Structure formats: C-alpha cells, structure tokens
Length: 249
Figure 1 (tube, rainbow, N blue to C red):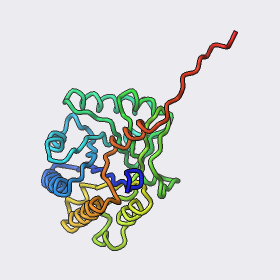
Figure 2 (tube, rainbow, N blue to C red; figure 1 turned 135 degrees about the horizontal axis):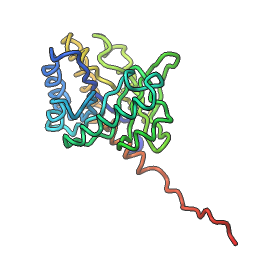
Figure 3 (cartoon, rainbow, N blue to C red; figure 1 turned 45 degrees about the vertical axis):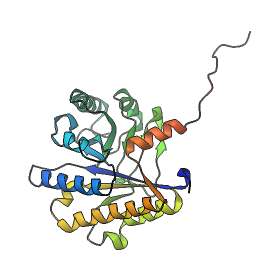
C-alpha cells in the first residue's frame, strides 16, 4: 500500500486545567502512553511560553509539538479582531521567547473567522483546529482543507475519551476505522482535564492509541501531527506559474 493509499491518524491533546490538581500526573501518564505507542501528538496549551509543561512535552521520546489553545474569551466574532490579534501576538511572542516553535492553533467553543487568517500567517501559524461544533453549525466527516492565505484547517473527528464504552461504539473508533478504510484523516482530540478525574477514561485513550499503532503496523494508517499535515499540503500544492501584469505591446 502506497503512502497516498494510507489513512492518517492525528492526535491533539488539550491541556486546560482549572488548577494544578491532577494536571502533572495526567500529563505524565499521557506522555507515557504516547511514547509507548510511538504516537507523536500536538499538545495545545493556553500559554505555551509560560507553561512548565511545554519543555516536558518536547523532551519526551516521541516527536511531539506545541500549539496554542484558544477559546471564546479571545477567539471568534464576539471577541473581535483586535482582541484576537492582541492575544495571539502575546502568546506567539512568549512561545518564541521561550524557544518554542509554534505553528498550530487549536480552538474550543468558538470559530476563528476566516478573515482573521492573515493574522495567523503573520505569527507563523499554518494549521488551525476549529471546533467540531459551534452554535448553529455542526461539522461532520470534514477533512483537512487549505483555506485563505494557505492556512490548513484540520477539523477534529472526535473527542476522546467520550465514555467508558469508547471502543465499542464511540465516534473515535468510527473515525479510526473510517480513516484506515477510506484513506482519510482521523483527528482525535484528547481532553486531558477529563482524563484526570476517571482512570477508566485513560484506559480508553490507551485503547485508541493501541488501535492506531496496530493499524500503522499493518500499513493501513500512518501518524502525522498538525504541522506535518500542513507541511504536506504545502509541498503537494501545484506551483503557480508567474504571470506578467503588463499587457503585450
């Protein structure tokens, strides 16, 4: 099976705890699981440059990457373009000052207006994860697509863990099976805060990673981060021949 015939599994981990309780232990456990199954993930943090978790993630065995995690407080039509520009610039600058390369933005509870995508490019953001559903709009079976300014929009397929019965009938398992069968992208979002309160949910995440690992072994699936998908899309884009704007004499 060629690379083009393989499905793709993408995992992003949202680390957005209300306080420190359970955070470090959960992050440690998730890192252990991802490293065990050799699945690199995109770790979305509200303020990567100010978070002690980012260095731990980048120093682990798998080739993880860091992204900015945004929400409705500063993303979306309600927040406005000015607020979005200010908050994005601050977070991107803090990450650069800390020595991190950040090319992804993961959003929960809001949508980045597409006329704001120029601001993403300004700060080196090439991949954006919009939420699966927002008021008045439901996303189903959407695949990554290149939008304005070359930004790659990579919608989530499912949030895991959904329940203790994830393996039997969850949307996450459906997404993995579908991706492997149809050479599509299964983008699984791991909500770290939900894992902290229920150990069986961590086992559900492990089941997902085991399933991904098994399908990678049989050649029906490969793993890519958000940055990887954006770079692949850029490399695959057909070159546009330059045209003169001058009229022939």
